[in-house]
Length: 450
Image (tube, rainbow, N blue to C red; front, side, top):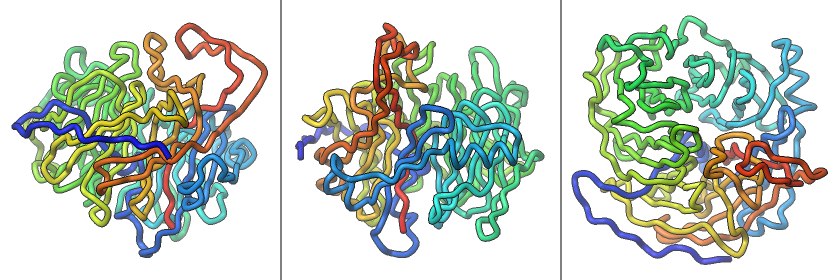
């Protein structure tokens, strides 16, 4: 084990500049979702290279004890998901990217970012059930806590979409009438949804759904934010933020103590390095048809820094009060105390196990003792700005970190490697176009409770 930590306390003020963030449906493994009260679990990670990608499944407790020597069950999605999608949609999925779970952890939802395929898989059998093609590009698809819907960020299609879900009968239907066209709509306040200087690029990045399943926070590639009433048909905007108020390319969302934490990140051409964290009072949003004035309620800005904020994980009420968010460019973890809405610690993830881990999506064990992080590879297929190589990593795999002091501090247990070694090739996605031999590029990760 490699010890990390040491508190970096920040004085409390009305606005705090610091570092932090967390995830509920991106890190999808919050112990609050555990329904059966046990602590058995699996860690699922996606290598997004080669067609439909590969799924790695680890026994959670074994992985937490000995990451380097824990074997994975490996499923080639090109032999399972691709044939089903071809049969049901006429096209094949490319680049498995984000993983989601329903509240009961019986179904996994897989978004394919190079195509529009959203795939529902049975957790117990590991088999795909239904494949839906939402259009141009399914960047993320996350389930509502009440299990009624899955919300889909159709990134380059600039559409926000909804799938009706019945997990008991395995019935999943794209609700076209609910779709919100983010490139061409008008907000309730009369402004164009997308407009230079306001919200210049409305490619949706991630849906973040509150615990009531009513409000959906939609992050945007070019900056700005929409809060939607997720129950209306079509989906209705109840709050709007411009790109001065909320930065670009966020995908971290975590609810704690009546606040929704949303980040912004880097990795895009105009803003290659960026990391902000905001908290929003959820009680400040009305149900449609009511709506808020522009940029209301105003977010609390917890930090504004350079780097690349992306994945995160939240301690549950049972196991702690902290949020963790990883900076994949600077290999740092930042910790927020959700009770007082303050940054309380920052520590490095560099260790003897990896000099450049480049952490991405994350999940927490139901025991509350370990956090698992997908580590990017030397040739990242998504999210990398070649000018800074924010997503280029040296040790693709799954990093295991242990929690101390309820999550205030941590230590590195080790790394479970995910490798796909091939003949040398030129990586055009990385700055300098290096020659590499490992094409593995883990990204999506969830913790599945059993």
